[in-house]
Length: 471
Image 1 (cartoon, rainbow, N blue to C red):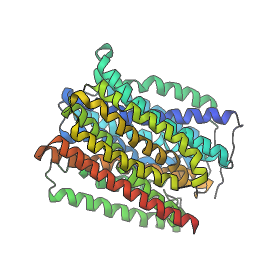
Image 2: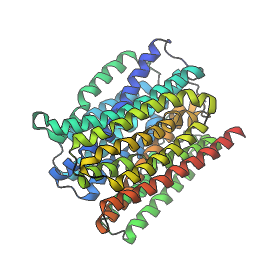
Image 3: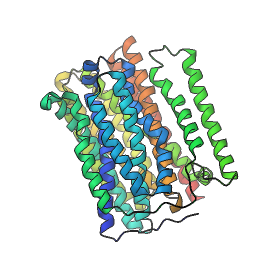
Image 4: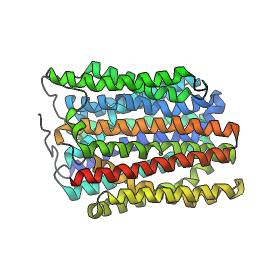
């Protein structure tokens, strides 16, 4: 197995490389949250249905999730620099397409393409970090603390920037500016990466497992896609049949990959990772954590803007304490995880549940004039998220060999976005269904209950992962 050079750049330059790749991660994260604030305005202007509202968010994640393992493997084959540059360029161009979309279906298609290009860009972030800081535990702790802070700042920037751009209506662009802002940022990242990122040459004799990539794409799309439109189709039998077919295709994908390996080929995923108990249990924890992640922000944003009639900027500002608490927790978790390991992540799950309970109690007594009170329990929830998210990737990838960095980060990225997309589709569908039959408050509380169950499942798998790591 080919071994990647641990430190292909000098100690000073690698921190500049880190800044470049986390800037791309920041752009990707901002784009997920910025749309949450703009989505009610987009829905009005493009006359989008409830399913299309969910799809604008979820297909971005589906496009990413269905191709991110392929993106990680392409990074292993062609080098992280080349794949990263291609991904950033594609992300920039598809952001431009999103901004000029003229209808709900066109915006959905553009968002799917945007997520697909992100699948080339984002896996190279963790792979690059894993390679550049593989042998230094103290430096890795600092790096993943920075990584967690960037994730938190992406949320804060997304909510604030989305509210500002929609409210200011620059040059009459309205919500379109939330996509156009990626264009100059992407061009700067491309220029910096071209100059500073190390170039790893193509490994001779390797090739992409194209059949595996196509089968995985079809399976994940069939599994997650029907969730988006199940509510509008009244959960007809065809919806469940499509999801069952997607699950069957994914099961067939694993068998296909084993046959590729037996023939001496290069499977899309590193099959050795499937036998790593700690890694696989960690991926289950990742799934349940992110299932309750973006879906929470979707229903909370819809509730504040539609039920409480808050303008986009004010709704965005209420999330700022949450994002700042996330950043503080990311710094704390980086230091505490070196002493307490995965116990810090479990504590973060407990804090999230406390925050959700306090938020539920606040929602019952809040109205439009007192909506600022929501910021306090939101900050508690954000602190709990920061305790988990910042060290989570490091903990889950800790048993992955350097030679499988791209494949491991690709599987991690796939799991996060499958969970995000599934959460948006499932919890979003529950929110809209309950709202139509009861009220927005009951719909929000029901969504919170599902988030609590998901966070509790995450804590359970973290405990199980901890046992595997100590075995």
